[in-house]
Length: 423
Ligand SMILES: [Zn+2]
Image (cartoon, rainbow, N blue to C red; front, top):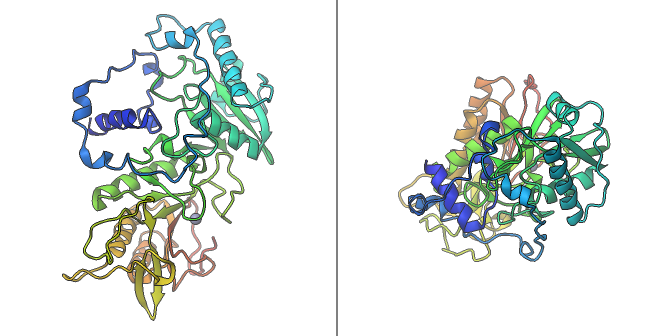
């Protein structure tokens, strides 16, 4: 109930954005009448969680770049009502035609095909057999862009982007060596309701990938962040267990720190090479940021408001001593130890995150510069699973220094023991 009422308020505040994924109905629920949003539910929402919905975004172009809404047919409107009969072949044809019109309205001129590419997994193959699925075929780059437009309505979706025109369809991306397919599918039960999402996923090497934005509300449960370039929800696809674990981590981090975890790049929906990284190709890497939102904490000096959104904190190791600051190399906004003793704000937050990650043995590597916090975690991780590591400035081997963010890597197989892991 808590998350539910909060979702509704978040939805109203943001004009109906992402995060609806946590409410995606099961197949049987899909054509139930649209739930009535009651005023009472809105006022019950928990204050702390929506304090963040009004944070500024990093994307100044987001309003200008909104794409036109695609026309809604009377048939789509009718789908909000309980459906007394199964979908007919005609219904499906109309929905598929609607989807093609939407794609053209997005500027995607590729001709759709209803012939299934080879090597599809069972449920997608069945959708083609039942004439409920079509695809457009292109390069990785094109398919990334198409999926982003269809799902988010924007090529570089931010926390405040709207719903894309195909959001109520099932959308799937599959790939071969160097090209990819975007499949749009009419679910057997009909399109998702006007406030929820179809099933959106990618399938690579037998693994299901999903989008973080479908499991965690951007701007409410985490802060979309990237220090060097424009952050984008379309660069946050990963293996399903990675995304589910990450969603839990972000919620627990927020519960323990009363602040949002910054989450940057994971992977592109097609997988494969992604700009700004050597890794992040396999849906098993995530960049996390410890952010300062202009906190009023006694360990921060000088006090500062961050009018242009939060800033990430840098870690510098100087003569074995940790320095946390908002400027690189300990140049400005240096944190001080509280008068009561203990650790600075960001050291405490890093410890919170490391403590949460330690408990999940599917995360093989935690990489951040600070040995003063991470040394003891490195030992405990190895005791839990041989080869599990918390890598820092003194033991990072082949990993580049991570002074402004935490890198997490998931791995299922046996890990190298006694030899430093490679990125
Ligand atoms: Zn990374």
